[in-house]
Image (cartoon, rainbow, N blue to C red; front, side, top):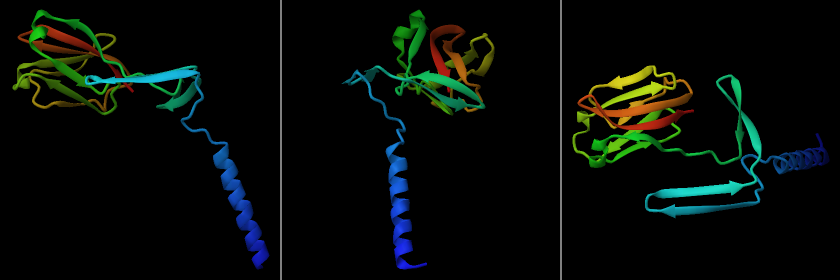
Length: 162
């Protein structure tokens, strides 16, 4: 190949690569409004005017609104003993691991039960020995996590498995 042919091929490939990257809009969106708020307890961000997009999940397609996805922490019930304890359960939505923190030194006094939306128990332990629970085997969906002590429900949280 002559030098001019090599030069021409390089120019064409460069233009092709630049034009492909110009038309790629991965994870970007033009929105009409938005803002971020933060404090010591966390932060919240929002955007207005988001588009719909679809992404595959385990062989099926899920349509999701927008480019920002929710981070939900929802306490569904609190017993009278809950005022003594401060629970933190994260991340929510969860993928492979769930972290649990409580303001007591011995977290093993609590039993934990995780049920699906049909009420079927998918995870249960009489004493929590670790602050982490493996949830990688859970199917995608919504779950309820219940903290108990002496068979009395203290707090219940709604969790989402992606």
